[in-house]
Image (tube, rainbow, N blue to C red; front, side, top):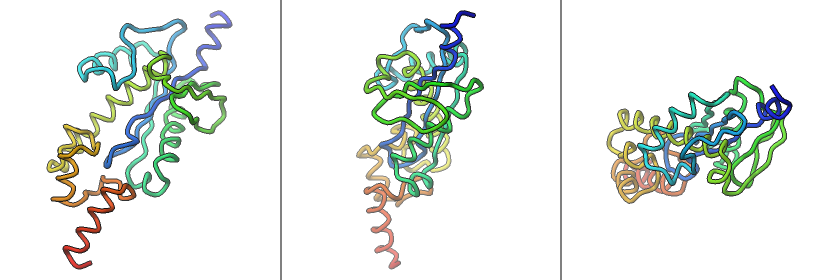
Length: 202
């Protein structure tokens, strides 16, 4: 293994999904790719079709030197705030890697603290292969978890909108009230809780 290849093994791409939804976890992924790996079709997960994301998710998991997911649940988000929860999800993802990275390339403007150096790259999910890979596997994993959540709470349509504040989700929230997986610190959920309290005289 050359010095360049050895150094590359210690660089991880990191990205998150799920900052904006009203329900479910925020999920981060960390991925270490082989030297020179581009992977056909790697891109920002938001710009890919669900079918393409699923295909690339399998490819990335098979080809990566290491990958890991980290998640922070709705109750933790309420306790921490979404910014701190996002950084915690990233920390958990990086800590779960089988190869400990020395440097992180992180999509956005902020980086998680830890025993590593880190570089924030705005738009990195569309320009840095390791970050694109992290974006894809985080998105696929979170969407799957929200489909499971739909089975538990079918009235909200989590299988269709993944917890994002679509008109249909907002209507269901007002009609049914929040479920335990809703983020109570987010304004639409807090408003629905107040409506429930008034309705039941709490």
